[in-house]
Amino acid sequence: MSGRVYLGIAMEYATPVNPEPGIRRAPTIDEQARALSRAAATRGGALVEGVVTARQNEGIGREVLGSLGAAGATGAYCLTVDVFRRGDLIDRALLTDVWSATGSLGFLIEDVHLEDDEAFLGWLDMVRAVNSVRTRDASDQWRSLVSGGAGA
Amino acid sequence: MTGGPYPFDEFEARGFCVVPASRPDVLDGLRSHIWSVAMRLVGVPAADADSDLNGLHRHVPGGDEATRFRLALTKAMSEGYDVGATVFNAFEGYLSRLVGTDVLSQRIPNVVFQPPGDPHPTELHRDAPANSPYEVVVWLPLVDCFGTKSMYVLDRTATADALEAYRRNPGDRSGFQSLLEERSVQMSVPYGSALLFWSALFHGSVVNREPESRISLNTRFKNLFAPLGMKDPFRYFSILHTTPLTRMGMRFQQDEA
Image 1 (cartoon, one colour):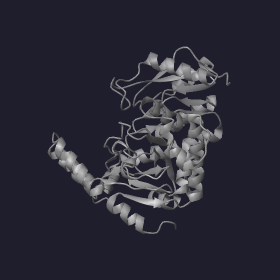
Image 2 (tube, rainbow over the protein chains, first blue to last red):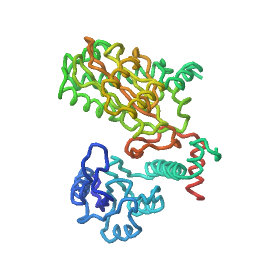
Image 3 (tube, rainbow over the protein chains, first blue to last red):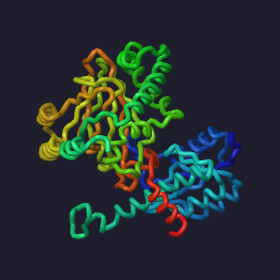
Image 4 (spheres, chains in turn brown, purple):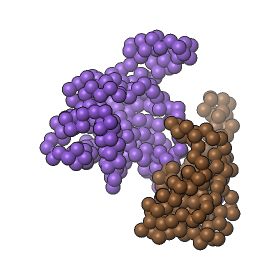
């Protein structure tokens, strides 16, 4: 049992439509808070009263670091890694800073829980690769390459 | 390199190929693991892998019970055991030639259990989109699969023709069904081999009319740096392998970028 105090980070979806195939609507912030609270309890910890919220595609801001400190949180439990995502990219620097401030990060939708540096760094490799791929895939050069254009 | 050139010519031309395990010992270990977990779940002592797995319907006849068993097996087989990594190891000679050596592996492989007569076969579909068209699907039977006990695929040409027919006449269900019946290939895959197929191929299964259970795994691999599909990569995949050079590049980016 961790006994950790988690700050919950919820996602305000851009539309109320389903975020996942087969799910009819996006979860409300209250529903997310309850789910995060259960997840924290499953880890032997507890969620701080009141979650902070990231807007979809804008991500959580750096003020989350202040919220962690103010709450005395020793972990962060996020609905999804996309709470760190701004446009195509996950904010790796902020993710790393939240890790450094807590040493415990959970992502409910991805069913990922990180509790040691080795696991975090391994997972950060995936973040780095996904960011690189998304950046490349969104580029004009890539579109030209895959469509057999002059850029190829 | 295990596998030789032939399967890859076929894979590229048709979008699928059936290959024997490049490490049969690894595959046998995987099947033994799943077999023992399955027998524990049904509460019956394990006796012989082939007959126990082919006869699972004697303990789990179908319907909701079959669904519960499948979900329980999916979860239990992955507890403390990396099924995806083991599948990759068993077929690495082929898979590394398809996806390279920086590899993402589906985090939790799927189990399909179809007892004889179960009225819920897998409907015709294709994975990409929403999955990435840069993924390979490994369909791995744990028993000999043939006839209606197996699955069918439409090869690349048939898949393209089916899509074109649907685009031209979206309401023509009977025409689409005829094309499907004429052009689908019912796979025959013995235990010890796997069907590797491209994620963009139409595939599915029919009601199992054989007197034995079908139990199989399916899982997906892609290159770490291949384009993503629409699915959340963090939810569905994890890194299986990276090369030393990739790890050095990653550290460089971490330290200097």
